[in-house]
Length: 221
Image 1: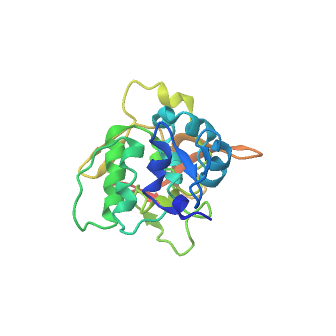
Image 2 (image 1 turned 90 degrees about the vertical axis):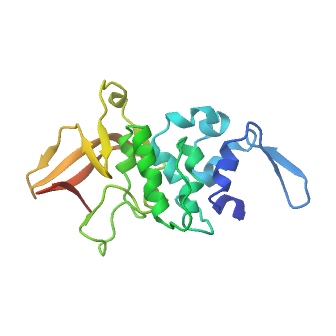
Image 3 (image 1 turned 180 degrees about the vertical axis):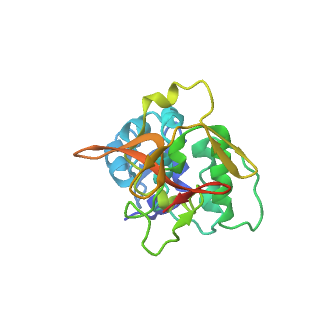
C-alpha cells in the first residue's frame, strides 16, 4: 500500500495537475494519470472520467467529492478542511488553532456557493448513524468520514430546473424552499435531497428525516 493515497493533501495533487506521472522507489516511471486511470479509480473511488478530465470536477455532487476524502488523514484536524478548499472551489480564511471546526466552516462556504442538496446526504460509515449516536443532530457533518458511502451518488436532473435557490444560510441557520413529505408511521418529516445512490442492483432516492420543533426542524439520526 502507498501512503500517498491516504493523505488528505495528496487528493488535490492527484486531480489538479494537467499532467501527472508516477514513479516507483527506483525512479522508474510506471505510467501517468491517463494510462493508470482505471487502477487509480479503484483505489480512490474517483471516477475514471473525472481522472481523465478534471475540468468536470465542479459538475459532480458535493457529497461524492467529499467521499474521496473519507479515508484520508491529515496531521492537524483543521487540515481535513483546508485540503479540500480547492476541490470545491471555495474561499475561506485560515484561522489558527480552530481544529475540527474548520470542517464545519468548509461546509458553510460550500453552502453559500452552491445549492447542491447532497451536502446534507451524509450518514457515516456503515450507511447509517450509529445506534449510540445522539437522536438529533445538526445538518452539517462532523468530518468527511461521514460521506464514506456517497461515492456512487448522483444528483437528479430536476435540481437544475429551479429558478430560485433551494436553500439559503443566514447566521449559521438554513432556510429551505422544498416541499416536505410526512411519514405517518412516526410523525417525522422527509425532505428530498434531489439525489440518488446507484448500486449494482438498484437506485435509491435519498431523503433527510426531520423532526419539527418550536424553532424549526432538526435532523433525526
